[in-house]
Image 1: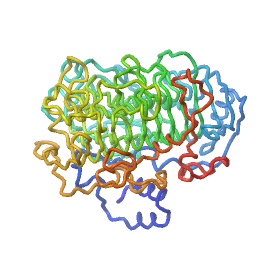
Image 2: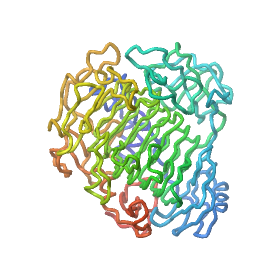
Image 3: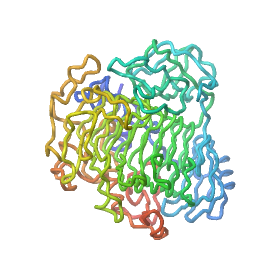
Image 4: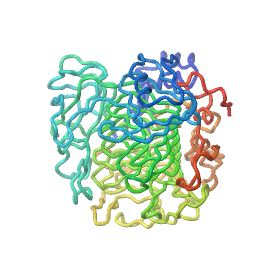
Length: 635
């Protein structure tokens, strides 16, 4: 049968009657959107990433609060709100001296718009061990540093990629809706194939630190659909193709869970001096099917958003500004602790050092159609930081699609990564000075594709890369050294003196990418790994590419903008220098339309924080918002 998630997306974006007929009349099997381009073993079903069925529309308000309400009063309203209802914060500024916490399932905290409802925090609280301003607080699945999980089972059958049925040695305390962390032991040796490894000096530069149990870095968080004896049916497929009995796979979980929490249409600011103490503006801890939508986040310490040990989280239609400490651990959205099947979509990142990073395992995620500008970093200020980075051993099968930003990176600081797919992205290096004043020039680590050692079986399809006048080298002759003006840097060591990898480049699948050095779209069979003994990818028989690898139809939030916006089949692109192959994605067009917020002076991180309201940028397309603010006009 066609996947339910595809039907839901069609119902939301193509018209209910047509989509219903399409879903009812769907054939018994439907080819994946990447079929014929990417080999099935090198991809997964990304159509179900994010909140199952999409973000729900909640119209019943249980409580409305006004400026002057305290954090304790807001928390009391959230704790008492019935399932499926909304705690509404009226327009105005709320000065809060404590953390807001949502620990009740199926409740929404909604403001009147990120430009109208402003939460200013003078202190954070503790959200699962992380300082936070807003906390979605679910249960932790124990196991970090060899701790004893609440529930632990041997995983005895059902290892095939795509499987949704597994067998466990015990299913005690396991119920529908529960999160399970699936895990298996790292590989002992490198066979030049999939090599899950986190050994300093062997496959990485230094030992990792994360929420894993022993040497078990490959993990996936799944949710339970049903339990029958020892058999467990999952809501998500197994993403990776290398689950197997020889690696002693296991499962761990906790009883109960938190799901269906929404934070919408408000602004969060945490003023204060630049103190790097690991704080977050938003933390989603131990949650499923929960979301942030239409928020503005200003002034972050370690990150704006932590997604920790969670699954099917959606972060969309939002604006993130600033990196308080602006160094190598300053992030926008940090995905941590094996969090899987999440969706980061249609967001703007400005003056954020590392906009999106996977920092501890996880699979089946989509990072789609985000715009990043001015990836601000100090010490060194001339180092270009990638828009997206995978920075964790065991991560894999994630899709990076349709984004507009500096570069993408997969480093081997802590170990190995596999099966990442990059589709229809516009990656142009640092062009901050074209938009903003006072941005430092970037001339170090400015490669567009920063794909380090042991990043294997990656797919790069339909991307537009580089910029005229800066990049001069397509790829180096040696994988051990890359000039800063290089488009492709494959197999290098992310840290000086660390291991390199001769297997990274020949295992990469590259098809239909345009770059400004060669000035052409490359349909080059020699860049397709068709002769591999394992996970080979046949040379595609056609140069035709689908619009998306995860969207079933044109998304409503694209409005009247050209779709797809980037790729070798695009014509008439309005972004100059790319042979007409690049249009502005909606998030970029949104950012370019935003006015500077006069509430922030010139001394505040450049003084270019923007006024943001998601309805103003995407009016009439946000299906979860029943009634956009009356002062917002259609654009």
